[in-house]
Length: 106
Image 1 (tube, rainbow, N blue to C red):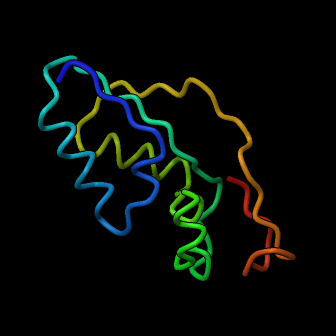
Image 2: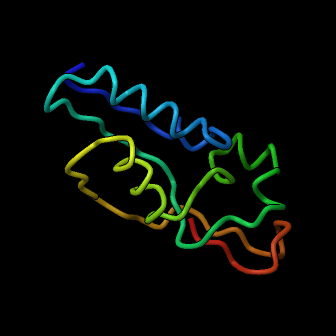
């Protein structure tokens, strides 16, 4: 592949599925091929009680991982130059509405 793009797809995978999907994308990429990702990430780990919330997973919120960890997964499968084009506030999970003791910024 010369170019592939995805939007929020990797955010819904659990466990090692994200790494497997990225590894497969890297495997089929031509030299100098490009992969463009658009997924919600967060600054801290999502609390366990939210990770298991299927409604939040369907909304692509509970699968968010810390941005540093997300970048490391992309680099670890072999992708070289990683650019972040934008980082916008997307959602805040508030303890008054979600099963969390702290605000979670996604």
